Amino acid sequence: MANGHDKSQKTALPWRGEVMFAAQRFNAWWEGYAFDPDTTRQAISKRMSFASVPVANSAPPREIINSTIWGGGREDPGDASWSLKCARTLGLPLKATVAVLGAGGGAPLADLKAGSRWKLHGFAATRAGQGRFKVTDYQSAMSNFNRAICDGGICFFDLHKERDPTALALFAAELSKPNAPFCFIDFTTYRQWARFEKCFDHPLSGTVVTADRLTRTLEGVGFRVTDTTDETRAFLPLVSEGWGRWRKAYDYVDTLTNTKQQAEYLHALSRMARLWAERFEALKSGQLRVTRIQARRLSQN
Image (cartoon, rainbow, N blue to C red; front, side, top):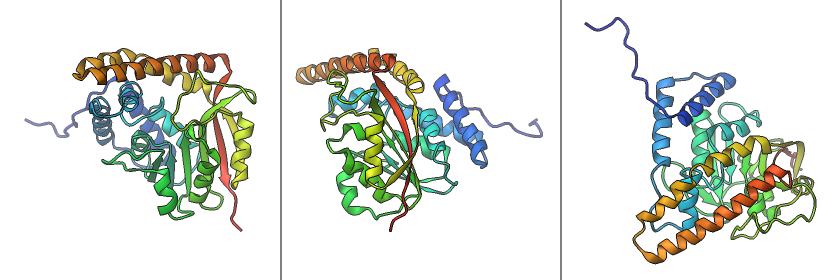
């Protein structure tokens, strides 16, 4: 005989999934919308399953390594809690339109979609996310997207990668409505002219600058900077989690049958390991920082 009230089957999650679940439950309470625990658990389970699927052997080594270490759809360390923490600083209403720069392969979009009701537009240096979350490359977006369509936005670690960060900052300003909040997360250096060739190796040959210089860049394109926060201590655990998956990245070479592919992959993996080792030490010593800059788009004349 069945009970008078049936309990739904609880979807088992690994500990990282439980952290994501707790973050989304908190976000629902914070934003004041209904929270469905069963649906949320199922969505997290599907997303974690997607992240564990290896990238096709034909993908560039950098993409395979990023997917293995940081998770499917990510180009930098991060998780749902980190994405939602940055999102809450915007203070946007439930049904806002939000731009996400540095969206990688779509993982930050998945994080924000699961924890909000926002309409999201994802952008990155290269086109990605052909599935559920489409990510548009900057070059195409600059000519195809309308101005002032977004109520706010977030930029994840893309200003330092660009040879011309002013152009990317201007793109963010053009997307934003007057007085719209924008959160910029990026690496900064503690003093001007500090050099970090051993820490960074990006094909676009960008440069890490001081937070003050980054602030001047944003103010020069039409933003008013309202707050600057050092997020290094909160970011370091995300890097440590990635270090725990480097062994898995090395094991992936056994799945490659082409000798040339194996050599290219191992070379890229060893180089990235050195770069992140140097970057991790620079972050711990304070020479390099992760800075969150809160800004607002000035009213347009």
